[in-house]
Every structure is written in structure tokens, then in C-alpha cells.
Image (tube, rainbow, N blue to C red):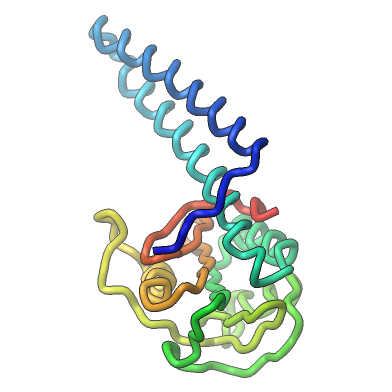
Length: 206
């Protein structure tokens, strides 16, 4: 298992503040239950939304911490993911950390160029012959594109996963790589680590 990095003090304060907000919302929900109020369904939805946003905030913080020893390309990732999410362009980016990942993948087309959001956007632009595969990134270099990652046999918490997400989870099951993925159906952004997907805020890597 990967050890979690510590929270910064500002992030700790933000999470504690948000959790207190959730506590207040749950107390209101308890009153709604006691009153047999039909608003209970909307209250459930609101609490779910608050928790979902809190999860994304925490996951975005940890993603930054997990990547920082291995790459300086946060701004490029952040900008690209935000654009992919807004436009619903699917994307899959594997960032190698300590474990070599090339023995685990079917290699695609060599790129060997510095990471930039413009290059990432051109690779994953719909219609590009490389857009369905994954890019492999080592430090600040896009090593290759159009790579095929091993697919996970597991579904995430009972949810059926698409091919990109199964590939992200699959590589993270076999290595310590961080795999960033954006859904072309929903535009949602997430990262895979240790066989688990974590939702993040698009553009929230910084």
C-alpha cells in the first residue's frame, strides 16, 4: 500500500470546516426524518453533493502530493484535464513513479517530447489516431502515446467501468503509477492509485 502524504495546514482546516458543514446538514436531515418530511430525498442529495465535493478536494490535494516527487508538469496536466473535462474529450495519462511500467503495457508510438498541455490536447483530440490509447509520462517527458494498458477485471465499488477507466485501474493494480483519466461521456476527471479510482476537480492539481 502507498503511504498517504500528510495534509497541509490550510487543507486540514478546509476539510475540517467542510466536515463540520456536513455534520450540520446531517443534523438537519435527522430532523427531517423525525418530522416525516418529504424533503428528505432532496436533503439526502444535498449531503451527497457536499461529501462529493469534499472528496474531490481532498483527492486533488493528495494527487499533487503523490506526483510532486516525480514530475514538475502540474500546470500542463491541470490545464489539459480542465479542457478535456469541459469539452468531454476522453484522455488517459500514465505517470510512472518508482515502478517501471513499460513491461506492463503494449507500447504505442514514441513521442519523446516535453510535457505540454498543447501536445496533450493534440494527442487526445477526437479523431487523432492516438487518442484512444494512453500516454506514458516519465518525469517531464511524454515517452509515447497510443499505449494499451492492462485492463482491470474488477468494477469500481459495484459500478461498471468503461475501457479507459478499467485500463487506468488495471495499470495501478500492477504498479505504483498514477493514471489520470477523463471520461468522454461525462467529462469527469479522476485518478487511479492502488486499484482505486478517486474523483478530482478538473484543473485542481495545482
